Image 1 (cartoon, rainbow, N blue to C red):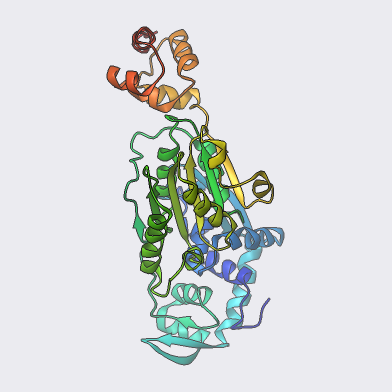
Image 2 (image 1 turned 45 degrees about the horizontal axis):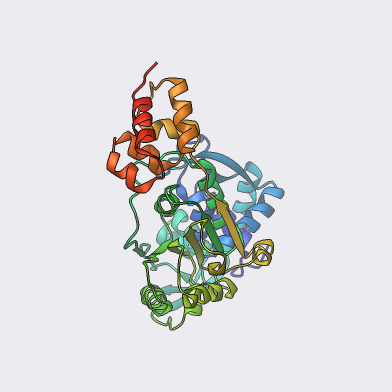
Length: 377
């Protein structure tokens, strides 16, 4: 264990989790004990959390569970303190009670013991502020700001179905050392909607959404990033500064046919280091000369690819909006659409014009699928 006042990240994680220890497991766990919640609570990069929890699990002081989390539809990994962990956390806290800390209060720094901090703000709050301390300084009057989110141009995720495997992969990306995630899919497969759904689940992240409109310039992309970066930190003056921001997620939506200058801009992003995570939705039919990253960067785990395919049958049937559809009719629709979300949604809405304008189906095929869509068992 680290010296008092010089707590290791592992000790801070354990102290933080000990605040949520209960004898009876709840029906829904708090988001504070997910990897995202831990990172946000103690002020470390999310990529550092997996390393800390792995050691703590190996030591037997915390356990990993997959459970329901308040505010999230999907089950997620959460971390709870074991009986042995509570013993260790108690020992750490006893030491800290007798230790002195520089404490920032109302803009002034003074010295307090852990016991004095506890008497001032209560044990749970004392555990929180000490586990959150920066550079050895405890700020007991510091309030964490709400996440800043610029979602101009982002689609709605209303009516989103399925994609649990893809969302889990994106969650894994956020917990990894990889910096860029490229979501690849043909038009109509819902790459943008998937990204928006994922963004909605990242409640503690600062988020900048940039739609790659036709003719967009690297200067415009740089301007959007810098303007947003200054909202997070007034000292930001370069793209490098933006990428150093913790808990920042940047989404570039619909990378497809872009200028050579924009390709070079993204190639530069792929080479820069930083704490920020970048998600790029891209079409699989993007011309080869427009790709900004290479196989070597994927193998080196700087870039991760996620390839979109059609919806599974359960999600497709829900999106189609006919739970009682005849099995053979549904099978034929799946064969023709390959589970493409856009086509299924247009069939659900009986949008003949939309199907004609956004698909390669003939008028006869569209009428046939509309007929099949309404066939019930």
